[in-house]
Length: 66
Image (cartoon, rainbow, N blue to C red):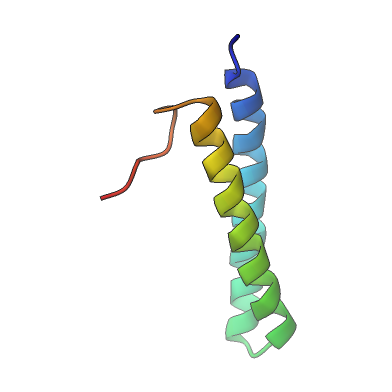
């Protein structure tokens, strides 16, 4: 069973979360404490999505790290 199509959809979601986290980080840098909390939540969700992508499509776009 090929799950790369699901992994591809998750990659789109991961990209959206990345963009939103960047926007929240910019707002947090300007002193918005709610944005700082939101950025942390988005980062946590993004990490979960990255983990799911690795599980569904090993070696398909994310480095394993150092």
